[in-house]
Structure formats: structure tokens, C-alpha cells
Length: 344
Image 1 (tube, rainbow, N blue to C red):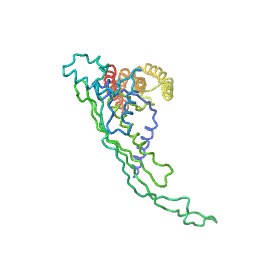
Image 2: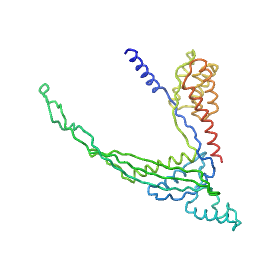
Image 3: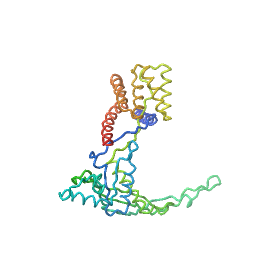
Image 4: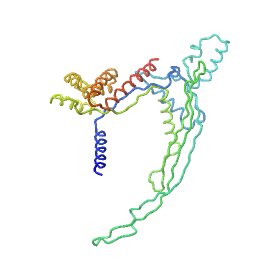
């Protein structure tokens, strides 16, 4: 029994100290799942049965995607789409000897987004929940000449789960050969609970459907364009070798600077720590690697992580260092792909 209690205590302390470890937020660039650059010059057709503003939400979000202060998408007025398709048919028939890049000035259109809202459903299921009414006592007892409530009124509240469902499909075809370069079915639900004793009413149905519409648009955008992913990385605050008092001070000050998001200053201090420890401290190497990664210096971070990994493998393996090497290798590949997509 004592061993079991000790195990539980150690597990709790491990979780507690891990949760309290200092962390840094990393912003990593992820590539689009669509490699075809035709997606960047696009015409957006009005989505069929669209009474949830999905067409508007998609166009609005696509218009706001920017990299290096330049828009990622060139969105052509969707009203011109029929003319674009007609021009394509005319040129493909061989009856016209005109440059597609000049005709109607719509030659930039290389792909067309279309789609439909396939289902919009609302379902309501009712049930009861027991409540205690603490403002209404039904049984008292005397306690030192004072009445003390020992039983309150119990009642059943009428509740319901309100399920809002949207099913939609989106597709992108190339204008050049009508090849399908993107297709996806979306199934989104929101379940909102309501009870007759709640003080706040449910939002209007249109509001809920618009929230779901935004979620679909966000997921769609993550599929078709590079995007940033944010996550937290744990720092190491214990030295792995014997530090001098000055080195301990440098580590402490660097961690404080990171806490206040002064990453460039922390980078200078940790570089000094790596130098003074002659690159033999995995703690110094790893923490500097984290800062480099947070600053977008991925190749430098990779070199530092690999050095920290080599030291860790000869001593005590550190899971944070092992994860960092795996993560940075993936980030380097993703960043290269995303930058290639942005530059096309």
C-alpha cells in the first residue's frame, strides 16, 4: 500500500513540475496540402444553397491571406466566371486564334472554386436535470437556538440539447484542363445546451450557422494555403554539468528574459553560456536552440539541437531534446515546401 501511495505521489509531482516548467511559444510555417500553383489565381463561384454566408466568409478569409506583405491569392470577380468558361471553350474549339492571357483580361484565372451546402439541420432533444433550490428550505433543525436548513427543495429543470448541423462540399478545378485539384466534404456540428432555468437564452439559429460557416471557411483555408501553427516548447532550467556561479546567473537571467519575451537579448546571453561551457552543456545548447527556433532561425536551431542530442545520448536521455530534433527536422521540410508555394 505504501509503495502504491509513493508511486501516486511521484506521478503527481512529475505532472506538477512539468506543468510549471517555463515554456516558449513557437510559430511554425506549414505548407498547403495543395501543391498546384493554379490555386493562387482563382475565381469563386457562389456556393449553391448558401444561406449561411459561406461564400462570403471564404472570399473574405482568402483575401486576407498575406505573406511578405503580398496577397497569396489573386481572387477574380466570380461574376466573370461564365465568360471565362465560355472563352475557354471558344479557344479549345480552334475557332478563335486569340491569346487567353489577353482576352477579356481574365487570363489570370487558373482555377475555379465551386461548392454547395448539402444539408442544414436543427435537432432538439429534451431531458430533465435535478436541481437544488438553495433559496427554498423545506426542513430545518435547531442548532444552538438557531434554525439550520437541512433539506432544500429539489426540482427537475427541463433541458435540451440543440444540435446544429451543416454538411457542405467544396471543390477547385483548373481552368486549363478542368482537372480536380481540391475536393472535400465538410460535416460540422454544434451542440448547445439550454435549460428553462438558465438566465441566458440561446443565440439565434442564423448566428450559430454563421459560426459553423466560419469554422468551415477556416478549415478550408488551412487546406489550400500555407499557414502558421502555434505551439509551446518547454525550456530546461537545470544545468546538466557543473556551472560556475556566473554561468548559473547567465542561465537564470536568460530564462527571465525569455519569460518577458525578450528573445533577442536572451539569444545573446545563451550564446555566451554556450561559449563559456565550450558547447558541452546540453542545457545551454537546447535552450539556445529553442530561442533560435522561436526567432525563425531553423537551421541554427537544428545544429544546436543535434549537439545537445549527442551530449544527452552519452549521459541521461532528455525527452525534450529528442522531441526538439524530431520537430525541427519536420519544420525544416515544411518550411521549405511552404516557402516554395509562396514564391511560385
